[in-house]
Structure formats: C-alpha cells, structure tokens
Amino acid sequence: MRTFIGLVATGALAACVQMPWREKAPALPAVQPGDLAMLEGSWAGSLTYRDYSPPHEDVSIPATLTVDKLDEGMRLELKYPDEPSAYDRSMLIASDEGRTLNSEMVLSRTQSDDEVTIVTASECEDDGRPAQCEVTYTLSPKVFEMTKMVALESGEAPFRRNAYAFVRTAKPD
Image (cartoon, rainbow, N blue to C red; front, side, top):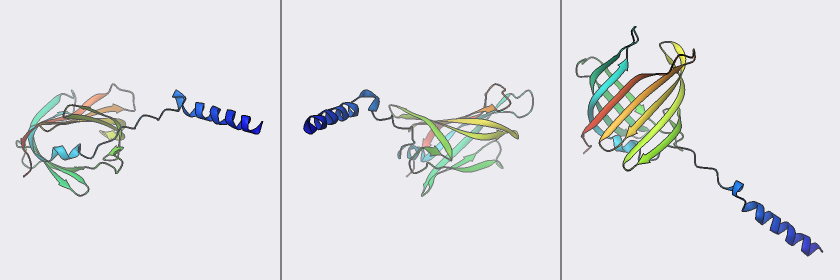
C-alpha cells in the first residue's frame, strides 16, 4: 500500500511540475552588454526642446555628440555649434544586470535588425515641479536618438521636454 501511495504522490508531483502555469516567468527587460557600445564615435544632429517660457514652443538647435567608452560606462559630450559656451558632459551607465540605465528603471528593450530601442522611467522634476519622466533611446550603428517625455504629477497632459536626433559622422579608431 505504501508503494502505491508513493507512486500516486510522485505522479501528482510530476503532473504539477509540468502544468502550463508553472512555466518560467518572462525575462525582465534589460540593457544588453553591446547596446551602449554601438554609440562610440562622433555624431551630428540637433536638439529640439520645449521652451520653459509661454507659449512653450519647440526650439531646435544644431548639436554634435562625441561618445567614448570608459570603464564605468559611456561618456557623452554634447556641444552646440551656434552656442560655443554651451556644452554638456554626461554618462550612460547600465547596472550590472542591465535593469537600470542611469538609475532609471528599464521598462522595455526591443530590437529590430540592428536597431535597439530602450525605454526607461524615473521620478523627476520639471521646472521645479514633481513629475514622472520617460526616456526613449533608439540606438543603431547609424542613428542615435533620445527623447524625454514628462508627465507632471499635477495631472497636466504629458509633453516632450526634449529630443536629440543624431547621425553618425565617424566611428572610433
């Protein structure tokens, strides 16, 4: 009798393990090791941003970008040819497991051919007001775009704060 009960219990356990609801959870979206590396080199393009002053129109200015690989991530150096005194240096740093990019949670990562799109989200401030920010990075060997959307906690309609659009001018040596 014990042998029979043991066989029934083993069979029941095996059936539970094979049930479809026991399938693996889908992998969480993450930045892959080669994603940011494709940015290394020189780029030319533009920055379009929403003016902080009413009527909050979009303003576009030329921009250049140089990306260098450092131990901790990718260094981005932005320059604006029409405004030589304006520049920005920043980093793109993915966490070890790729779940965050610059401390922003990775919401999605999709790939189509050689183009990767990564969407991140974080709490932020816009013009001194609390908000949720979502940044979409589109990376490929020839094109790099970053678009920042802002949703103010006050409930106003989300808007695009800025968008960078670049095409490659030179790959690294």
